[in-house]
Length: 455
Image (cartoon, rainbow, N blue to C red; front, side, top):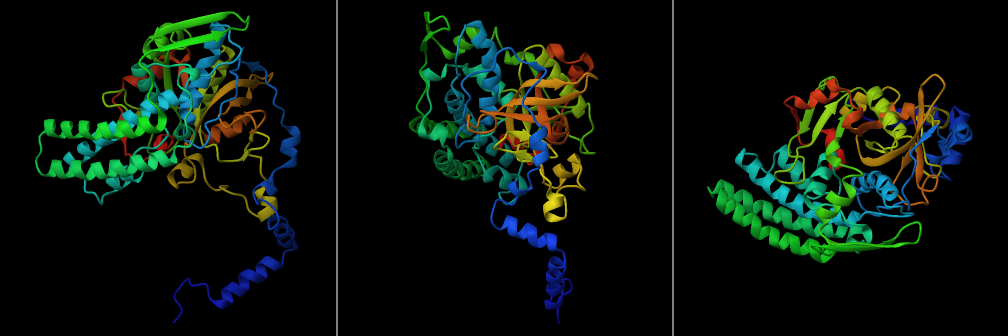
């Protein structure tokens, strides 16, 4: 007996006949079996009509173009790319980078400590190791990704340093092997802590155990990344070729005295756009178990319509400040030319069907087809004569051989569909929007797709 729904020989024959009855399928097959099937769908018209020219651009873009290499550090690179233009202008610098590896080091240390405390917290709640929460936490105990408040936590606690004072290492540029070692230890320590909780250990005994575990974790991270010095001395030439020296100074003092007057992370707020019917606009949200610093600021999502995020981003650029943002960079992107456009690919012409055509932005979140996976920076915007926003210039962190010398172009239509988050200075945000931060946040589950950028 043939099971209902089985692909019988008769049905397979029908599928085959349907394919070959249209000669366009044969032409498409000839093309796609010899080349990249998605690149074969790139719209020539979009390439011809797209120009990387903008009506408003920040005064100074950072140099050099940065490269996060084989890591998930986009959230760190993008914020440091946003901070550096004002800093470079203030100190008359031709090129400059803050140390991404410095924040990466402290995030790894803090993230491991945060994970271990989350394990105790979840065990006290009675979570089973086979349950969805523990399965989610154990899947990737120490990822490279992060969210806005996680950046704020790191900078406020540890400050910043120039890249020359804490340069890259093998594991800061290719983190998977270090992460594998850390994940193994964290899962091992997870069992120890859970056993202690269920055996009735006191809070002090649990904290002592975590401290012992962190000695080992810190050792692993320090061996792989190096350990930042307690003080730095930064020597540099400005554009006029004049010698300058700052230090000895602590990284926190360096941030407070030299960086914060140019860019204060505490003056910025994070706005998101989550159109799912379950999550109304003008409400405040947070995600359970999401963070990196014990006792640090929680991750908060002020949910607003995409049009507002776009308008505030454009206004920030007009006031000469770039904008940190999170998006689904994998969608409708022509990588070589650096174009993010919903019309970038003509799948209908090649495959006889479009992709995602029946899914809204909310649907894509609900069905796992789209989520926030990458952070970059807006540095320019185009606004037409009718005051309509048309496109943005995007500084990425994939090196200068990607896009237009490291930059991308993102259309307004693409923004509406695939941008989920922006960070804007409070002075540009209307008072009623800021008032949303006074609400008690609605807690979303740890696995909610709006937390993906941190995983």
